[in-house]
Length: 480
Image (cartoon, rainbow, N blue to C red; front, side, top):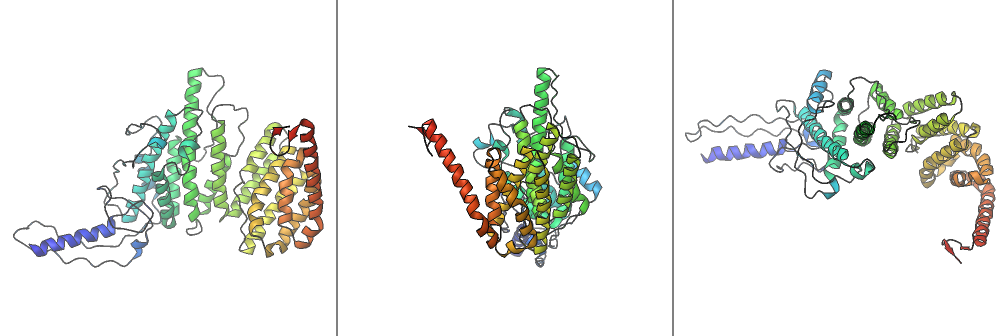
C-alpha cells in the first residue's frame, strides 16, 4: 500500500508540473490556482525534453481498481487551425447579435472593484491537443471578459469616454490576459489573428469582409430610437476599442512569426477604414470615435515596424484618391484624418535600408507639403513630421550624412522657415523648423541656426510688448 501511495503522489506532482499553467506572465511554477486549471504563457517548457513516466502502480489488495499511470508527454502548440474548427469554436463563444449568454450581474464600475475577479468556468474539450487547449482557453476567457466590459460600457452614460473604463491599466486581469495572448502569438500568430477577426465580425453581425464603420444615428429618428442607436453605436466603438488593444499587443510578434500578406492586408484595410471622416455627424460618440481612431493609428504604427511597404502603399493610394477629388471641406477633413492615422509611425534607425525607405516616404510627404495650399493640411503635415522627427533627433548621429535625410531637410527648411515668420503659421511650423535643424548636418546647422534664433527673439519681443500694453505681467498671466 505504501508503494502504491508513493507512486500516486509522484504521478500527481508530475501532472502539476506539466499541465498547470497560470496567466501571470512569469515562469511556470507548477501550482494550482483557486482550485482550477489555468492556461498561461510563455511556453518554453513545452519544448523541454519529456520527463520519464513514473513507475506503474503495483497491484495491491487494498487498491484493486487504481488506474494505470499514463505516460507523460510534452506539449506542442499548433501553428494553425482548420477554418471549420475556428468558425465552430467562435460560434460557440461569441454572442450572436441580439442574443447574449447569461452573465453574472455587474455591480459598480471597474475602478470600484475590490479583490480579484473570479473567472466563469470555461468549457473546452479536454481531448484537444495541449496547444489547442491553451489557445481555446485563453480566447474563451477573453470572450467572457470582453462581454462583461461591454455590458459595463452599455450601462454608463453616453457622455463618458470609453478610455475611462477600457484604458490600459484599468483592469490588471484583462491586461494580463492580453499579455498572455501576445506571448502565445509568438507560436501561432495566424491562428490568433483569424480567431480575433472572426470574433470581431460576429460581434458586429458580419460574416464577410465588407465591413465599413458608419455612425448608426439618424437625425430624423425619434428620441427613443435615437438613444438606442447611440447605445448600439457605443457598443460598436467598445468592441473596436477592445479589438485594437489586442491587435497592438499581438502584432508585435510579427518579426518572430511572419504573417501571410492576406492577413496583413486585412489588418491594414480595417485600420484605414477608421480614418475616414464622418461628415455631418455631431452625436455624443464623436469623442469616442477619435479615441478609437487613435488606437487604430497605434495598430498601424506597430504593423509599419515590420511591414512598412504595405502601410506606405495603402497610405499613398488613399492620399492620391483624396487629392483627385474637388477641394471641399469634406476632402480637407478626410485628408487630415488620413494624415493623423500615421501619428504613431516611427523611423527605423537600422538597418540602413529601412532607414532610407522611411525617409524616401517622408520625402514624398514633404513634396505634398510644399504643393498643398490649404493651411489646415499644412499644419497637420507639420505636426506629423514633428511626431516622427523628435525620436530621430534624440538618437541621430552619423545618420545625418545619409543622402535621403539630407535631401529631406534641405527641401523643407527654407520654405518652412519663411512660413514660420507669418503669424498664421508660426505656432504650427516653429517646432518643425527646430526638428529640421536638429537632424541636419553640422555645416547646415551652423549656417542657419542664428537666423531661426533671431526670428524667435523678434516674436518674443512682440509678445512681451503686447502683454505690457494689456497690463499683463509676462509669463504669469497676472495683471499689473
